[in-house]
Length: 255
Image (cartoon, rainbow, N blue to C red; front, side, top):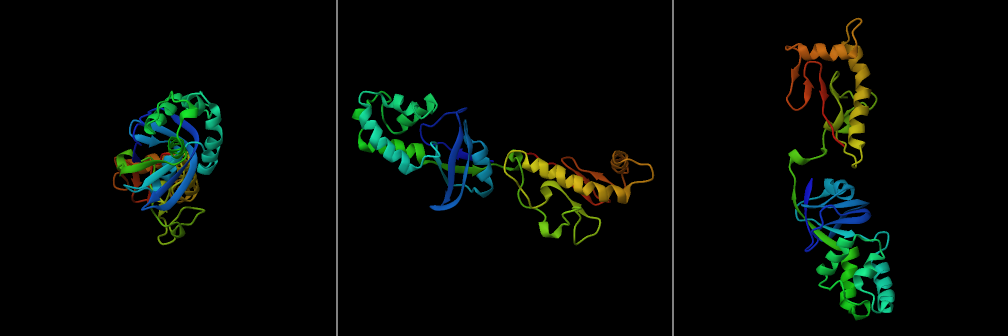
């Protein structure tokens, strides 16, 4: 998890957008881009679009958000230049609401652009108009710092996939050694993909492991209970379960 510094005056916890375009930059170089929903929190930004980019984020990276996607900067610039002067005595806050933006967000971006929300469209200067376009389509945020493992939702990195038999999850280097879940070098986008990977790899691993260690007429559940109870043959860790002698590594996963 990352903590994103808010743009000045955009303190909008609970406000969300169903689809925005977010772009991650480092030293003015584009790193990645994502399109998904976003949520303002008391710490800055969250939601799928931020979580999915977090695997590439570093402290002090910058993120630009287009709140009017799929419109581009150029689209909104040209649209504002054409429409706003024609709106006469319509207040700018009313005009902005035509884009189905949350009311509190409209007030916040007017404040950020140092424009009174009651300013008539006909009185808006070109600079003020361009400032609004920039905030709406190129709003910049900064990655303040990286959250620790205690707030992480999933892990990245792990056992090199080419060293694993994908049909059994057995190590290609050590017979009888199996790896599943997030101990593998896989991580998916938010939305249940990581926990699905944990369940699926566990299922692939279960048959060869159970056939190897099952006693006559013993169920898989009875096998697991027996291994956990045999102190000399298994060690139970506090935060995860590692069956050392049977060489099965089970890593809990969250979406």
